Image (tube, rainbow, N blue to C red; front, top):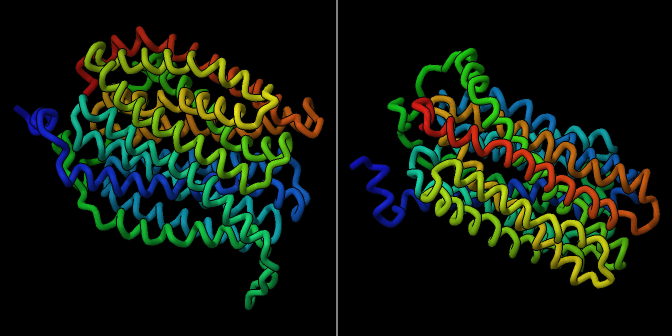
Length: 443
């Protein structure tokens, strides 16, 4: 019996829990730094005179373009060099750039700082996906990735709950005069509070031991696989990869659109304070994330036991269809509490496919290509989900639903439409995934 198989029969080891735990904490901090901007919509509109579309570009395009573009060479580096070291450098970079965001005095300075956050965060998930596939077998991989991806919901939830309190506290303070920097506004202080602690997390990631690779390479990685081999694999499995990647991309678009604009929608539609909106959305994110990601990871492994990799994609399809009604209804509620409940349900079903889809990708590609293929997967899902999700809602709010509470209707259009498109792509992928995951090239 191989080590991986034996691991399926025994409890998770302390080393496995440690790796998952440290990467989980890092992912939590990445989403705190990524999502804190959602609570600053109104202060940014006031202090910098920004439109919803400009703010959406800070939330989405400024982050997503560089996150996705640098992710491709980073993925190639991950297949050759220490994944732990690369991830640690990335954590330190995005934490520093989040703090530097607090020094911005203009829109374009803040835009540049958010690009730096995207570059740093591009290291984490490709490293985690590749590393987890080496220390977990198929019947545990979905759960492990579900726990790791729970960091997105925990981070977003903490960003809303604590971030709302921090923004509320900072908003009650006077502008601070710092030597050489001049006047620093209250919302700028928030970036300092959430960014600097991440430097400690970078040290924790760097202290992990790089595991041996299952493909037989050393811990530092085998020689680089030629780009033409990567392209040849992608071309031979384009139906599986296209359906898989675009399905998750539109699931991600639905989730990110809601998370980006739900706090502002509660403020504008129901006249809640930022702290009240942050607390409510944060609780919904924590509950929805726990159910969607850990539950989704557990279910993905159950579906894998019944239908192997294609079973994971069946679960993605079912979850996406279940999320459409809640997404369509959340913008039409007279009660803010009911709107928040529907948001939590729609969010849970939007993210439920993520751990199963991440595990499926590791099973569709050979070990030496996991870093590069994971980076390309993240390129697609973040360029579509993060790059377009926030901006799609903002464009409708600025140009179609222009009334004061127009955000609620923009969300009611974008979220269910994105989930419907996701379901279509998951359905398209089912047959090709079943065939490709059974072929010798898959691991």
